[in-house]
Length: 543
Ligand code: G6P
Ligand code: ZN
Image 1 (cartoon, rainbow, N blue to C red):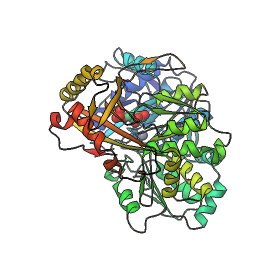
Image 2: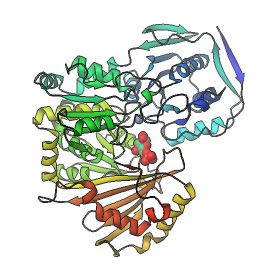
Image 3: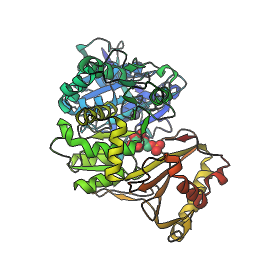
Image 4: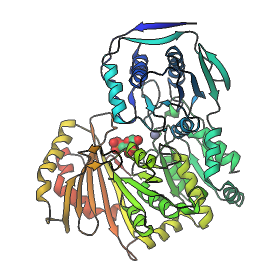
């Protein structure tokens, strides 16, 4: 086998975000595109000679081919060992776990998360560090800088390796270990949760629907729920990962997981429902007839984590992203836990977890996780809920009612205005920035502004400062509206408007969130003029 150096020239636009480089699949398939980015990644981390890397992805179109290319490149770059999920499959949390468990130097995850897959959809490559978490900005910037000066990439001149058969072979000088993508992860879940209690629950007729949306959690959910926990076969639907996710948009929210929502809101609904996204790090949980907002889910997990064996010693602390509701803050205050408010993006939690400050984190964007890995973890969140329901012997509706009665309810909703002209969205927020200082004490729709600012964060571990992380308008009584532009949208600008209103109870705890939030929605309109300026009649997506 010979190693080939291919001369290449820089390709524009290979700037990874915190979730790696995401582009149209066809762009990734252009000659040299993947190769340039992967070589730049290897170069930026100081080369990979003698290193061990984990590799896998969510099964989307081009993933297997990309994995074969990356294996040949890693071998040509002198990697000591490659640990690859069979068929190039690994969910994002499973990859994070493997990096940690095997003491690997890092890993590459092939996914565009919840974005659709296929030749006309999206693809992505993300580099994770030795702690199992996404590369920090210092590393992604170095990768980007390298893509702008790259002159050659290295690849083994060999046939594509067989990534379908479990076992160890050699690729050039490199050990190539193809592993079952599911078993290590399932074992870890077994070490965190009370599988015995969960088995009993399923034996006694508890019914669940897990919608894997033709994405990567299918094989994990079948192994854990149906094989190890004995849930009836068929509990997991859309369980086979497909290159185009069967045409589904694998984003677990009420809009895209509509099949699950219809089943859960209908008569004869199962006791519990859940969905996950393309790469398995997001989750949505639903009870029979009740949708649990991600912010509420985080608060419930914080309040009940001690019932789960893996957290029986209590939590070190909790964290949420700024736009996530303050429901978890109320739990933390009552339980005497530190509570951190970070900018949007999982990477901010990694530092807090590595420093041992928090063990549970979550975001309104359907991400929940703990320090068992350094990514958010969809199936873990589902198992947390199952374990809590098993111990408390309550339905989801009962758990929520009990939670709100104890802590009060943070009514919450997010309104998204998608594909706005970027200039229009930016001008709207620039105007808001201009009048932030004047809002205090003004009253809109009966709500008086207590304070307003643009969120900035100083990382308590490394002191890094992140500015411009979204606009907050806080009203007296604990209501607020937050506005920010999405960092993951692919077309124009997506404006996210996060609405929250606190009800202390005991009355008024079971309103429809949109009704409960109506005054806040009107106040936001009065202050920012979203509908008036965009000429939209309402949001495109409501979560
Ligand atoms: C990704 C990140 C999350 C983050 C989300 C925000 O999914 O992994 O940590 O919350 O993006 O997306 P947005 O579109 O609101 O910037
Ligand atoms: Zn994801």
